[in-house]
Length: 89
Image (cartoon, rainbow, N blue to C red):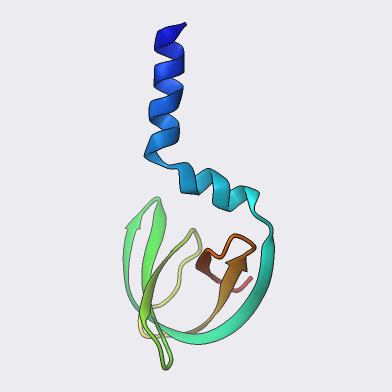
């Protein structure tokens, strides 16, 4: 029993924000213009996207996107204040 509790505590300690972010409702979704700069593909694409008048961000997506293409992405803000980006549907 102690081993199971210790294992659960270790897993929770590794990535607590992942579960708390998924549990927090989405407060707002804003569209942003961006450009795809590069991609690393390993079952899921991890794209480096530069936001116009802003920083570059990494976005995971299963759909293919062309390097150098303009894209519309969404800035998603959750109630707990966390922000993440995703490609628009």
